[in-house]
Image (cartoon, rainbow, N blue to C red):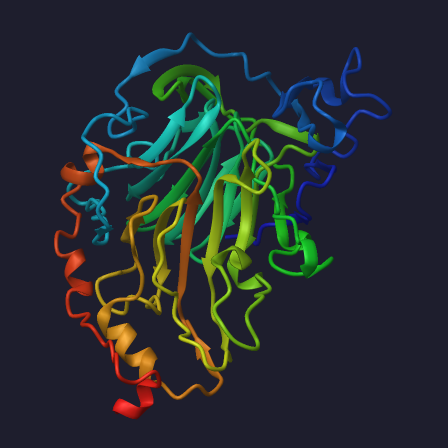
Length: 445
């Protein structure tokens, strides 16, 4: 595969032309009476026209045919995609899933869209407020099919297998330990090369941003220049009556036929684009004296709510780093939280759960549901020599954290057959260590 090229920078105002058509971008205006190369001008808006300049999102696309050139959309089977958060009764228990099973290509061909499974979510699509968490399980490329989401942005986290993503803005190769964001309304198609699995965080009505740094200062966490945007690439390909455009609209799937590839954008400019990010580039902030800092210091991207400091969703990672805190229980502490916490594992072994939390699986701890390190982890960490140590080498765990009260779907609780019914047992060996006659525990050892 030819190495792909990218533009660097988060949220930048960018411009790109396919080198086969130099000068394809109009000069000095957006929609001339006749565009260079007789292209069509089309604007893709990701925000209201009247949003402040700092939050206004739009791009101009110069394409061989406008995206309106298709047959009417018709309803199609939505498989395991849902936005019905009342399918099953609420469950406040700690939930953990074993690795979600990928269908074998030899038994059934499943592409990215067919392989979408909604695990949990909250909120309302029609009012543009909420989120959904999906698992994708696929084994074949999409071919003459593309997908776009009218409901929100998709943050895609591949866990097994790389994704070659064709978009209207160009191509991206996204591998495990990288993420990508396909924003609302952007058409894309995915090629896979093996049995492939991953996680998706979908947010309604808002876009992902870099978190504010506050006292951290000007640098740190995910640096803007490490986000990569595809460069313009087009295909002038006829598919008479045979290209299918799939749209997720109000939680349902619809399909329309057209005669040409949708990836016919010769040039574009704007600040509303897809992008990708390599998690290895995250600049970790951590405690260097004592105590355990809150996981918010590991936030890569945030989708803000209207309440200051409260997110519809945060994307948080737990990357390799040094642990040096003195007089401190270093793993994550026992905790009850007003937020919903969904965790996934891309690779390795999460430090607080060395056992049943496996790559390709997940866990959900709902608001005020207690959670924390398992008994084995607690025993080891309570007795460990507190020398500087590397934490999470070879590991990448992540968290989708939300202020919303997330409901699990029927597929998540039942149909997937991946729910770990024994999860609660990892805390059963915890015993009272109370020493009422000795304030200093060392005296009783």
